[in-house]
Structure formats: C-alpha cells, structure tokens
Length: 544
Image 1: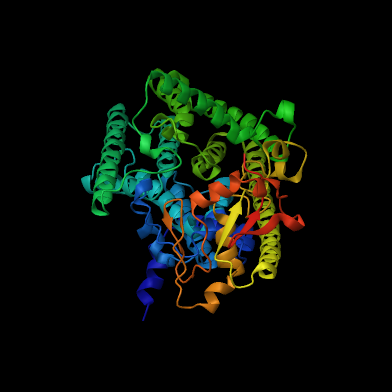
Image 2: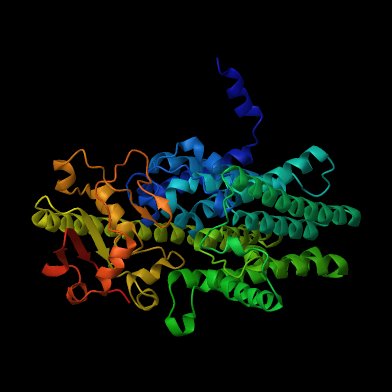
C-alpha cells in the first residue's frame, strides 16, 4: 500500500524540485514558526475568526475555494503550514522554469520566496494567507505552461486558466506572473537559445494568455456578483473604479509606479531620514545587480544582437510597471507590502545571472549577499511578530480594564454601549524616526493597540474579552438587538455570540455632539467611562 507514491517521489520528481520545495518550507518554518504557534491577531483577524472569504465584491471570486483546504477558521498552524506548502511548490516551479541545477542557488531561491517582506505581511492576515500563496503558485504555473517553444494548445490553455484563477484569488499576484515572465524572457535572450520566430510567437502567446485571462476573470466576476444578488463592486483599494482612467491619471500612475518601486528598496528618503540595515543591504544588492546584468550582457554578447538587446532593455524598463500594474487600472488603488511579492523575483534573477555569467569568486559574494538578505528578512519578520505580541498583550490588558470599569457601572439597567473615538496608533513621524519601528522597513502594519482602528474595539470586547451586560442575562427573553457596522451583519465570526448591543449611529452622533461627552476625558482617565441615560459611554479618544 502506498508504494506507488514512494516510487513517484523517488523517480517522478526531480532533485532540484525537491530541494527547492524543502528549502522554502524549512527556511519559512524557521522564520515564521513564532507566528504559526501563537495567536497574534491583527484588526482584520477579529473579523475572521471564522470567515468563508466569500468576498466576490472585491473581485476575489475564487478566494473562498482557495482557502477552503484549511477550513474557514483562523488556524495559525494549519494556515501557516499550507502557506509554506504552496511557497515550496512555487519555489520548485521557479527552479524548473530557469533550469536550476546549482544547489546553492536553489536554496537561496526558496529562502527568498519564503522570507520576503510581502510574505511576512501576508501572515499578518494569516486567515487568508494559504489562499494567497496558492495564487502565487498558480501565477508561477502560468509561466511554466507557456514557455518559449511551447506548441501544445492544452498547455497554453492551462496557462490561461492559471492566470484567471490567480486573479480570482488575489489580483496582486498577476504581477508575480508578469515579472516572472519578463525575467524568464531576459534569461532566454541572454542564452540565445531560440530563433526569432519562437520569440515572436512567445510574445504573441503572452498577450493572448494575459488578455483573455483578464477578460475571463472580469466576466466570471460579473456573473458571480449577479448570482449572489446583483452585488456592486466595493473595495477600499479602488477596484470599483477600474477603467476610469484618463491621460492625467495614466501620467500620475507612471509617477506613482516609479516612486513606489524605489520605495520597495529604500522605503523612504534615506539621505534625510537615515539608513537601516534593510536599506544598506538593498543598496549593496542594486549595485551588485547592476554589475551582474552588465557582465551577463557583455559575456553573452547580447549587445551585438541589436533586436534582442532592445527587447532586453524593454523588459527591464517594464518590470516596475509589471510590479505595479494595477495603478494603471484605477486611481483608487493603494499598494500594501503584501502586494509586492513579485519584487522578490528580481533578487532571484540576479542570483541566476550571477551563477551563470559571473566568475566563481564574485558569484560566491553575490550568494553571500543574498543569504544575508534572507537572514535580515527573517529577523525583521520576527521583530514584526514581537510587535504584534506586544500589541495583543496591551490590547487584552486594555480590554480587561475597560470591562472591569463597565461591570462596576452595570447595575442591570444598562442596555447598550457607545464607543467614542479610538486609541492612538503609530504615526509616520514615529515610524520614520529613530524608534525601533523604523527597523521594520516595509512592514508597516503595526499598531500600538487593537482598539485603534474602526469597529475593532467593540468586537474585541465581545469576542476576546467576553464582555456582557447583566440586563440581557437577567432578561433572557429579551433578544440582543442586531449590530450593523460597516455593512457587515454581526456576529461576523462562526461560533461567536454578540454579547451586547451598540447604540445606533444616530444616537452615537448625538452623544458625540453633547456637552457631557465633549467634557469627558479620554481613556484611561477614571471618568472616561460614564453612564448616560441607559447607555455606557466609553471615550477612547477625541473625535475630530
């Protein structure tokens, strides 16, 4: 029993694939284990203790399927291990695309994919991370199925399906496929393996695959919204305004692309704000990459082949725009670090060229630099997890203290809660200053307290602290009024019970305008929690 699987593992899977997979998995496990073995919720995690990820309105019509393998609960260990599995698969595919044989290069590829800051920030939203990593693997398959010289229509069709599903899970990973395609094409141009007609056919195939894939993605999205009740697009990153771009918007997108691409490597103006280890390593990397590319062009004599050289330069110029392609679809798009995983491929591409075209001593130095970058990425990831741990502890302490104050005021007649304002969270000045937070580089999803965003304070008090109002315990026949915040009917998480009602937005607005609430001090002052009529008012911060 099972001998067939063992035989397939031994003979049907290349050694390079195995090494790539296990390198990514092992390095990722060492770096992210702290996150996988602790409960470190972010604000969005409070809404996704159980969530089907059926967010068709955001354009992610295949995300629910992608996340279904791990159940719809936020299970850090399960979600984390599945995420590493898909990262390992991606590493194996990338190794296959570039025909990697050098074991050091393969290990570095797995390490870069598993530790890049985009992956770390994705684990801030770990309840959906496994789905996103599947999207990355599908993006890599898109390139693998449509390599130069591929004539089988079945493979090209699979590439079309892969890019469609990639976009249906998370649109940002379309960039991963595009950048991977560009790097692969540049590597093939340097090697000069193919005749011109094959390059032309490959370019045509890419245009068809991506063009038809985006058409299919959009069509399925519209059908899915109709099937779920004529939903309308609604996403805070601007997907609802896709296609509304004029000439001015396009020029602005070009500017944003250039600035954002530079920011991936330098984060901010380091000449004014100062250096961090992340910036120093990237300065070294960009310098090394420029030398490596120049050496590859010179040794391959690519510059003699004018047409190929033009294509090579065009591909290099296209990379930033491929990374930030969605800037050109909507003015409202805002990129987070988790959307920038495609940049990781540039580090891998530099390693590929160094292994192939640079002398051993210098290529060894390049490998050492990439290894140090991986190590620094791992350290930065654990710094983020440490901040998340501190954030959760502070939030829990805040929640318990607020609940204690409420219990002292709850005489059985209090029928609702009003939360005014929010606790402060870090500012750009704090982030860019000489605090420890600045060492987090691209990882900006750090808050001082989970009571600092949106409707999270009420949800934290209900779900995590378990705050109840005694009126509803004393009168079990009275149903707790439903709470509707942000067009989401609560409770939002499976298995949770909403334990107290929030006052309506109209009542809340009246209270905020009242002299009594205006005179209240903010938390943690003794009078920051008061009873007004039959409501308990908590003033976490001033409302502007």
